[in-house]
Image (cartoon, rainbow, N blue to C red; front, side):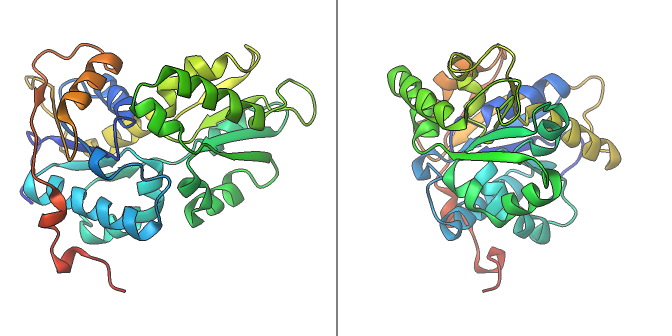
Length: 286
């Protein structure tokens, strides 16, 4: 790993959901170059076991860090963060690594009723990391944790009818909504795919309900770590995006066109499956 200020930032998700985080990163760091890796051939992570998610996360991170020389790594997936962030930091202790987690702390601060709904994958909600987060960030709040099976996949496939039906189902489970005692007034989007369905989710709640995601906090934290390490791109640097992954690259490119603001010069490339590059030394001890 020989990164410097001119090196790119690696951003990784199981699919296209992390593009919501990439958008926030681009807004905060317009001069930076990004490599976005979508592991769509092995998605969805949220309905897989921890061992599977850990192995895939290590594989992709190894490709980005050792193969592409990124200067920072953003794990733009709640499930991968919960399963593997500590192992990643142990493997690359000098690398700025930023994960994502459901925005429980700001939700508690924003809520007037003390009842919050968290929409997330089953894997995220079942993780020890989420339990610790709930214990520390929301010990006195009522938290309705709603596992949203299939929603990330429906968004990934741009299936409007299925996305609508699933949003209706899960928002019903997140309610009742309102400003009174025992009513939900704040919804946490605990998967990076879900911001792309915010408009659909809002149709199933009063206008007063707040929706919170993690894109902005992650971008600010990434900028802070790069500044502390002296790795921010210089004033003359031209930002850009390289899209790559393990699955259908044309679908990823189409998703980027659909959900990202225009990015002239974005490159699209396909790499071999990075699972083949993970060495035994990169795997955590049993």
